[in-house]
Image (tube, rainbow, N blue to C red; front, side, top):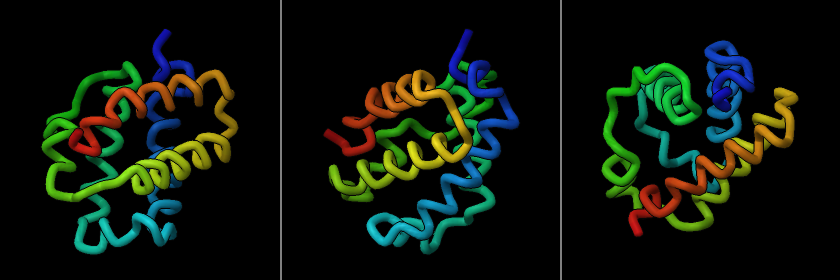
Length: 117
């Protein structure tokens, strides 16, 4: 069973992305990256990406992680802030710790691409 199925499928990903961006936009370490971003489109892209990354239906048509983040000059602090927002979101949604661990592993698997290392 995929992480996507374990956490509740589409409804769970939709709820997680919405709560996640509420947290991100309040976090002074990373909120500025989204000042000029169409958040409706961003949420839709993120939902499609996470659905695919978590093993659900692949409807993601965006760029790869390295290309998307290439010119952002992200640091470990930025990555950690996003991870904290994600973990906080999953905890708030009462996702089981074992599933949070799986999701963190997925996030860590793209860390070098996000940080363009």
